[in-house]
Length: 376
Figure 1 (cartoon, one colour):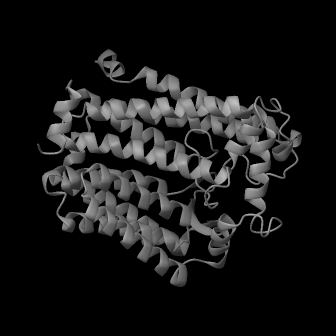
Figure 2 (cartoon, one colour):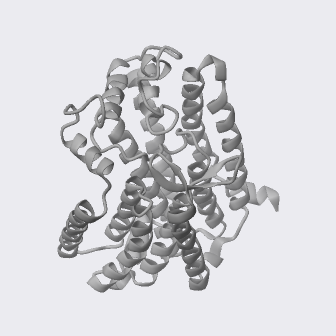
Figure 3 (cartoon, one colour):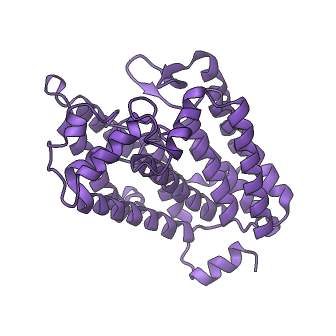
């Protein structure tokens, strides 16, 4: 039985993830101050081991129970309640009450909500994929995303709110939205942004957006993070400065190089070639996820797999974008590389669920899968 369960694990996917994790660990080790040598490195190894254990345990589980509406409603309401509690009792870090303080570690519940939202939207669209062109389903699905989005903005955590919005938008898109409705969605998004700008965004969040438009206006304050990050990436050139020779991170010019700006710290030491290699592994990981999504036993599994791919792509896009100065600084971690346990656990939990679904996956021709999904 155990042998069959282990066969459901895609070891090629694991092989693509390990170099990304290793790159993050090596980068953390290289810039850790000598008096605290290995702090980030050692703690991250513990989180990686725990996350892999979660991944393997989840791979043994039959997740068809997640198709039950009452289960997903409970999960959604439970995590939403925790996000609501955070507004009052959350631990403040980087200006946001986004963390639960357990004494010996911190946990960010919004990471779990992102995964729950993927499940909820997969369930909703799987039952209505033929009717998706009806705008009311786009509106109702938007309400599911709006609840956590508002709760996260009240913390305030603009970066996670952006990821939640991207997950909803992309899942609506892959579900078969019409072009007219897509334009309506973008118009709604613009209206929401204007509302947030005048009534929700804190001054520092507005400053980040101002800095995104013109990052060199205030390089000593609001533009400092982006300025130092672009210096780090650019100074790596083609082959990098070499392991342990990244001056921006070692001399503490680069802020939070273990988390938000780990890509910049890595790019400085490994250069364009090393950065391209990491991006290649990310592409391979996304490719494997989409492959297993195509083998889903029903539209629920197909949409969940696509949602997990969207989850990773949105994080990669936003994090690397802000490291390159192409997007506002939002504090979004880079999957598998950034320091921290909550995002790692969520990432491996999502992949574990995907592996668990392989127990009842199917072999199907891509054209047949496309026709069934679109209701042809």
